[in-house]
Length: 338
Ligand SMILES: [Zn+2]
Image (cartoon, rainbow, N blue to C red; front, side, top):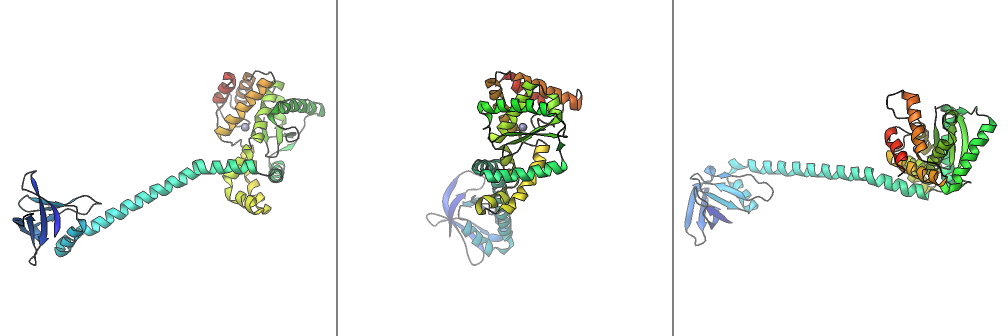
């Protein structure tokens, strides 16, 4: 016996009713008082398929309809009327298809959220807790790779090196970087470039020295010191090699550092920091330049000169100031002073 509502043929009028099937497979609808409302052979009754918890309808040949929420009861009727069994597999397909779609969406969202927020957040935490010896070990390996594949000894005179050192020290003294942490190294090749290693070594190429005026150089150093202070290099390494990095931190197994150091040379050479890191370093450089009494707008001039040198009048990315934030954006940042 199934409880539901009986809708009269071609009418919105309904009454509470019950449905049952007798042993001749006749569907019988009775009212609450037990009086007969309708009868029809079950094979002539159309039964809507099971879809989640939607009400089921038993459509009678004369246009009347019995509606119920008792899905199991209806399934039992269908079992009796074997020719209508198809509703069962439709329902199973419908349910499993939905379950698959829902689980794919949930799994993708979880992975996406971890990649977008989880990994950077974890990388930041790890970078802030990285012991000095580990930053030094990663930097040593990175420097070895850079020296053997990408850069060469400097050709800048000692007198010029001393001049650059003085600017570097002035910048560091503003608080941009502890003087015992940040050190300036000179190398050639890679065009006009400068980059920072996690332990505070900052490499400047000969071409950068030749291209940048002293005030601009202060800005370049301030920017690189910000990368050191904010541990951008380490964060980048952790983002790209979270698994070996975790092994080092958790187990102290330093053989994994080799794996991590594989990543950094490429990042530094291509200036492949995220736009966020570059902007953060630019804002920090801006503050440092002000402390030195230098108008930050000088940096916009350097950026634009570097662009012109490399790409003529076409706008281009790359080189020292990275592929990510385009030159126009960064120049505007320095000019706005904010
Ligand atoms: Zn940078």
